[in-house]
Every structure is written in C-alpha cells, then in structure tokens.
Length: 363
Image (cartoon, rainbow, N blue to C red; front, side, top):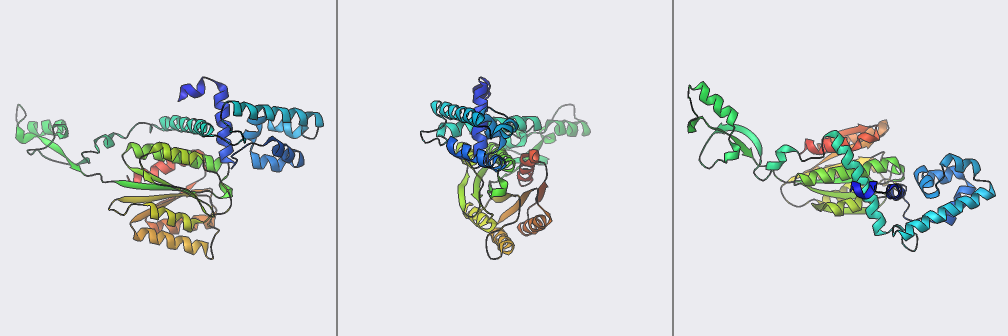
C-alpha cells in the first residue's frame, strides 16, 4: 500500500483531494459552480469546500486565491487550473464522465486513509494482533491448575511446574509437579460503530471518526469479532450488519459524508436491529459531537432507545467530540442506562485510541 502511494506524489495529492471531498460532503467537482461561489463570496465558498480541496484542485494557496479572486485575469487562470486538474482526474479514471468520484477514486481515497491509520496504530504499538487472541480458538488464559490427562502440551506452565518440583525437593520433573493453564472460553463479540453524520461533523471531526472506524474494524476483525456500522443524520445513510468482511466496512466508511441534523433515537434503534438474536457480547459505540435535534422530545426519546437496547442485552458507550455541558450530561445518562462508558474527547487525534480503548474494555 505504501508503494502505491509513495511511488508518486501525485497519487498522494489525488488521494488527499478525494478523501477531503468525502469529508466535506462533495461527491463530484464542477468548476463552473465552484468559480461562481468563489467570486460571489470567498469565505463562504472556502467554508463549504475546505482549504485542502481548494489548494489541491487549483494548485494555488487559499490565501493567494482570497487576495486575487476579484481580478479578472486571475479568475481566468484559476478556472483553467481547476479545469486541468478535473480533466487529469478523469483521465486517470478517478472521476467519471459526469465529474463524480468513480469507484477507482473511492479505492484510492480508502487506501490513503487506511495507510495513515495503520501508521498511527503502529506508533501506538497496536498494529499487530494482541497476543492472547492468538489462542482464541482454545480460549483465553485463566487460572493455574494441576495437570490432568487431556490437557494440551502448550498449556503447561513450565516455570510454575519447576518451582513446584523444587519446593517438593524433586531433582527432576514429575508428572504430579506439572501445572497447566485453565482455558476460559472467549465467546463471540459483536460491536456496532454508530456515527452521527450531522452537518456539524463535517471536516476534521468526520475524518477522525472515519479513521477510528477503520481502526476498530481492523483490530476487532483481527480478534475474530464482528463489526457493524450505522451512519445516521435525519435519516439512515448507511448500515452494515456485523460482519468479518473488512473491505465492505472500509468502503462504507470512506463514503460517509456529513449533512443536516442529528436523530440519535433512530441511529440507536437501527443499530440494535442489526445485532444477531443469539447469546453473545453485544456492544454499541456511538460517536457524536452534540445533542439529538430530531423528534418531539429528542433527549427523552434517545434515552428510551438506549433503555430498549439494554433490554436486549446491548451495552452502549458514547464518544463525545467537543460536547458542551448539556451534551455531556445527556451522554452520561445514556451510558449509565446502557451500562457503557462515556469519553469526552477534545483532541481529534485521539479519537481512534479512545474507540479502541472502549472496544478492549468489553473485549
């Protein structure tokens, strides 16, 4: 993956451009509309488009564009530069004939997002598989017991066995000295990552949410658990039934865009409908930056949905991104009712670490 991106700086810039377009809720590029908005109101256009897109699409620094946008000669240069870039993306197959991001474009954006997150997980020391999960097929290590017929050779605790032999004055190991690890069944775990895709999540918050989703999917699937996804604002935008299919999860995550309001009740209800009707650990991780805003009683209906989920054996945790006091108070009530945990995150670079911390606490 690194070789695909690092072999050509253009690949990296193209990937950043496409990734930023998803974060800003842009699925296509239309130079005429973009130029019209830039000339009419640069600040508003920058807010809607984002500085990353402006720079990579036009090859000009946003500050330089702002300074010269009302000069006719510069407008022509800017339009030509944007046209060239859009045509280049089409020639590479990253945009289709209608200037919409193609499947190949989605794959490149996903590749860049995933490589970034893998590098970050490595820096945390989390990129590899957690050691005790390598024996998941036999269960997790539990208490030490005396050896009995049928115990696995690999479960013998040699150090404790030797200590027992020495304590008994034996010069060599006797079968009666042997100690083995008693295995405990891990059981199956199903986790659903619920993302609030309201308009306030646009940009850096959504980017952090996506990276955290990729980290969760990558780590949980390594651990033989299954991960689902629900993306909601005023209506359902995407859902994935808990699965071990990483490509399906990853493609759905990279396609997420932020718009409109927050319907937390529907997000929760959609989530618990996706969990299997079987005995297993079922956990919902909700990521949001504010209060629910849809419904006659948004907060009351949200709490009721959490209670319904708990009745079905589903625990609920909330990861709050820069919430105000009212939002944090609601989140605390949600996790108390849902027997989960609340995390107030101020640093967006830590969202993935927090989501993984929550997953491992129910692991």
